[in-house]
Image 1 (spheres, one colour):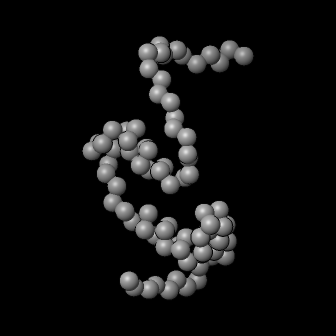
Image 2: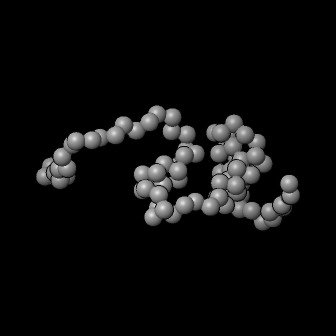
Length: 83
């Protein structure tokens, strides 16, 4: 593995990485590594996979534990803005 030094990093960016690391139970270094890895992964374009699959892949790391139930057989109704 290689190393990389990032100079002149904005303090707000550092604090955001620190907060995100605490949220995920990781060190700042490990969190920064995870951010770099996930941001450089080659994702398939929505045209190459279904939109729902692409959205699920894109947001897989946000920590949603419960599945979202499918709604089938429902008629589509327009939104009522009359209130």
